[in-house]
Structure formats: C-alpha cells, structure tokens
Image (cartoon, rainbow, N blue to C red; front, side, top):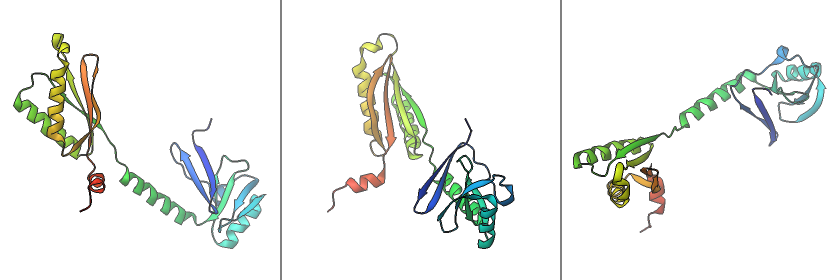
Length: 201
C-alpha cells in the first residue's frame, strides 16, 4: 500500500487533489516519465488518454506547465496549469488551514468532598481560565474509603461548582460515578450561540 492516498474528483470541470499523509512535490514537465497520461486542459476540459509528447506539446502551446496531479491513477492524470501560481495558492490555503485550526484540550480540575472555601475558589478561577482559553474541563471527585456511600455530597459539590461557572461554561456531561470517581465534563459557553438563542425584543 502506498503512503500517499490520492483522490481526484472531477468537480465543476476542475480536479480536486486530496492527499492523506505527508504532502510531496508533484512531478512537472520533464520530470514526468510515463509514456501515456490522461490529460486535462488548462480550461478543465478532459482530453482523454494521450502520449506524453502530445501532453507536453499542449502545455508548451498554452505557455504553461504539465503537472502530474494524480500519479497513482492508471494512466496517471496530468493537467496543464501554471505550476508557480498553483504552488502559491496551495501554500496560502495550507497557512489559512493552520491558522483556523483550533486544538481543544481537555484539562482536569480535582475537587473533594471536604474541600475548603479557599481551595474551592482557586479551582473555580483555574477552571474559568481553562474555559476562557477554549478548553474543555473534566471535573472529578475521588471518593476515599467510606466516602463512596455519600455520593449525594459529591453531587452537591459538583452542582455548586457548576452554578459558580455557569456564565462561562455549559455542562457537556452531567456528573456520573465511575468506580470511585464522580466525573463531569464542562465546555466553554459559545457567546454566538447564546446571542442567537436570546429572544428578540
């Protein structure tokens, strides 16, 4: 199996190339050694299977490059285009994709049944910072020894915690007991969604 999975889809007369894995430079002009290729003209028109000489001549006449856009197809697919412009646009799209890529981490806040006020407030402030940064937060309480028989106390602590962060968080997963832990998941509140749901005056 090849490392790069290439998918070419005819869409509106243009080919979209999707690659899985690390991208690599495409073969152009004299680098293409295949005897026959499936040719796509500069205007997106399919020219059918032609010899590499015919494909190269078509690119030369158009004053453009012959680019192998789908090397794994049989025969490989080549398109007549401005390779310099194509690379510039691809790099621009990659930069935009990275800029818009948002990594959501799940942070953790640990509470206890007998947590004191100062520690509770510290945990609140820390959780609020996590949420403001766009992270989800796993809030957990560990039941030690016979504490497991007093789950209602743990639930009360959780509910109090949620009430204090309700302006910046939503409960994505309600408190549930797993083994000797009670766990809930908080997610950042989306102001845009809140605005859409607010009743119009």
